[in-house]
Image 1 (cartoon, helix red, strand yellow):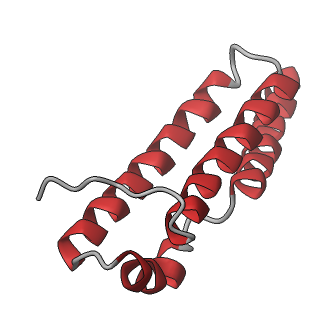
Image 2 (cartoon, one colour; image 1 turned 30 degrees about the vertical axis):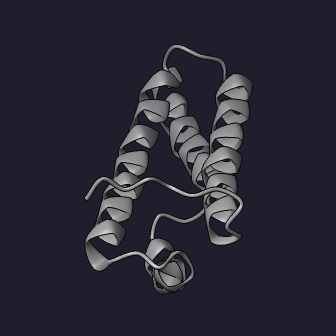
Length: 103
């Protein structure tokens, strides 16, 4: 029974992590605005999309680390990572920072 409740706890925590870090399907909703504000090409936008997908893959590591770290620490780390990632994108859209593209 302990293993069964652990599985449900993992499901609940992964849902919380997704809630803290935002939805996984929102890049397409703001990518055209990001492209126009930054004045980047479609190829450069594709690179940003790949970086977004790699960030989602990194979220898988949070799920695995739940076996080794306490829940409160994992939620704190995921909230910080979400704030950092979306904050960085906000800084890009507001043109406070710029990304150097080599291509």
